[in-house]
Image: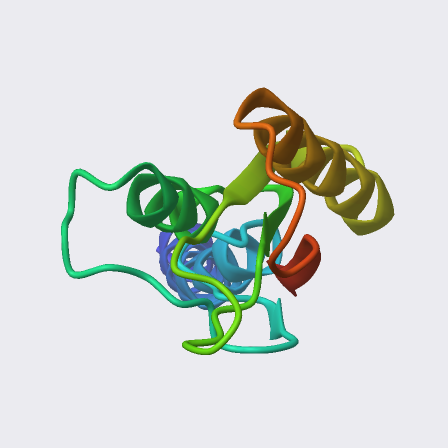
Length: 124
């Protein structure tokens, strides 16, 4: 009888510890849903089909190191917003570098010569 009661107590304690540890482990390893380090609020259109809106939502939903780069919006200077993002990179620094390259490639593709330069808006 003693042996069985001891096993039940040990099982109950182990189950309690496991329940307490699992949520913490899950929270520590993911960046999903985080906006990360925002350097400035990105200007997003209200259109959910906009490429930059889609890219920013994908950035927020990404579970790894990611970055979102965009041209800052200024009503006086630019009438358009260009952006680039990189998701789930090995590090935050690599994500920022690749997001900048993506944004610059977008500027080159559309042959933009004036307006704001690409900047990292947010990274995690």
